[in-house]
Picture: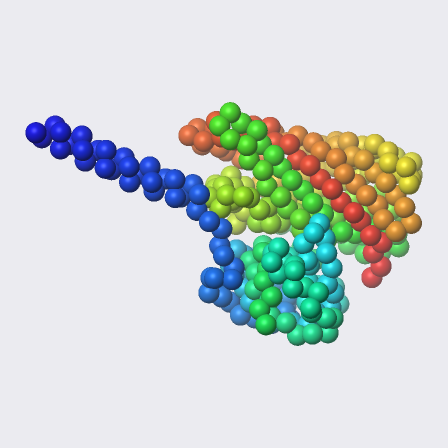
Length: 138
Length: 181
């Protein structure tokens, strides 16, 4: 009797473990639209922070879902995905927002000079602050 | 150690600021592909920064590790947290010379690029073959090369070693446009 119970417990544990492992293995990427914005900031401010102290800004912003508000200075399509550039007071650095497939479809409705809020995941700073998987929230 | 390379890179970068004849892309594409018995792994980065100084025949490339997007979120997490430790080493860089740059023209030609690649804090000198095409308003560069994971102190735990190849194929594709600032 006891042995049968033990085997049963192991089978149940094994099934749960397998199920859990399967779920973890296939766990989804962050859904930018559904997740709550962790940080809301202006284009000027985030570029300023990265320019002044990149290491500190990395700790604060990397891999976070950020809502950046700024003025569109350029829109273009690169490799079938939209890229919106938000300008800043800095002459060299902007915010490059690489759009999701869905947001790319909406990009043509926005014009240069418009103020927009874009939500995306920050991957760091090269010449500009870069967001990926971005959605236009307006 | 990291700061030295940052300074070196900034110096190389600063040299470019004085140049007249520069080409740049902020949307360079790099893909890496690993074929292993258990699983094929591939990731794409479409935010690569690359600058060519046409006067000197030099090229400098900066890559954000967190910009490599994988199909599976768990793989991306392992890549960042365990393998390349992108919180510690957020960028990979390459700086070098395009040998025989003067020979590049509108007809695509294969040239050698020799320079230093830095990944996971380790710098190695490499020579890469790349296809170059130069027109009035663009310099196209594409090609591929192999990276040995062991060269860069990237350790793969034995438990997943069958899933990740030791030799990774890296494919790149850049369309540089004239850059004036």
